[in-house]
Image 1 (tube, rainbow, N blue to C red):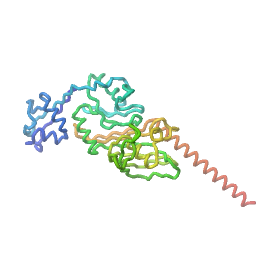
Image 2: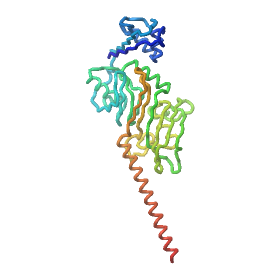
Image 3: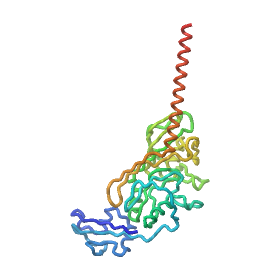
Image 4: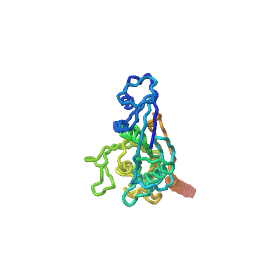
Length: 329
């Protein structure tokens, strides 16, 4: 894959070295090392230059990103992709349920990586699969795929520095009657691997890594809650572990004890993404609606609650009329 990027140097950046200018553009050290090893990877006004070259106003700086590597262990397999946005540097995909990000033992073909490799191959492009914000197998919604090492390096750094805003929506159920979720709050509890499992995670206040989840209640129906989550960190199963610790389960989340009567997969959806484009340097905002299965589950919850209220109102009316009859006797 080849990606060429042109910069016209302004007076503000004259007298800077090429390396300093590129670092200002958030190029990572690894990216700069790769550029140094790329034949004619850095040109000024059509001439190859070292990174120590001092730029002048109106210089044309051309960067060439070359990648011959491919994800050879990922088989190209057709799977429907819902691509929300694509350019030369990245893709935004609305991931479906029952779709792991990467291949694993006994599942080498039914993954997002397989589908993206197939899509790229059909477009006569090969690349290394790099997913920036990884979603669990049954979590749906927006995820970022970087298409070259430069965009990948910048986006990974932005993720570490909490510059990528990720908003999820989920359906919770209280474990016990009377347990109530506040209107909003912040969960700041470390998460670690569960001692007797290689998959499950738990709140681990001794050995866990810091994890921060902000939440806001959207709607409540009896013991069920429609909740918006915003992540400051990206630990494995973070939302699932944090809400479980507080006494609430995402419905459909069998691993952490969620109710399966309304939906057969974890009711969690990556709804919004906001970040600065790694190369174009402009704000990017994406939002998708919750999928049909989550919408249907919440509608069932609302109908059940309304029926309960109507039944309660009918009972109150019956008792009132009975009381009036008694008073008239």
